[in-house]
Image (tube, rainbow, N blue to C red):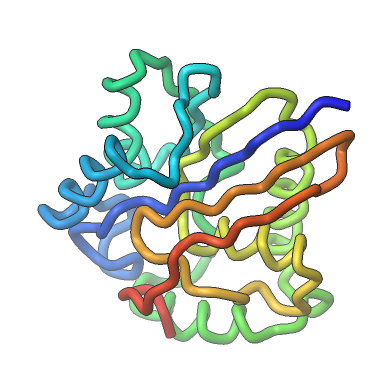
Length: 187
């Protein structure tokens, strides 16, 4: 019986909204939030953890202070990138997302459902303690699955919030939900 800890960290505040810039970095506030992760009491020692990130700039920038603190290599993984919105014009993304997050999981577009299933599969394939720097909807998709929610949106993770999934023998043993707060992506 081996226990695996998977820590999901939402990126810090972005310098632009999701609909305005496809890959913004962090704002000054977001950089401060990322730096505060170094002393965050909710994080264990990460010496024995793999570091994984979405390839998006704001996730990479959020990981940087902890990478430096622990002298870690960062693995970028497309699985943990944002909810796919192929063909949706930037000015329509907020309306599209408002519709998607309230849909029953069984009614999601194929692209979104495939993304969601890949996330779930990836989490259960994890064999080592891992910290993942990712996005609002990624964390929601995983928590929705683990809490048996019938929609993607089940909580509002704050910037740099920490959500922990403890897996033992390929089953979720515990789930700790990160801090919540209404942020710009929220509808």
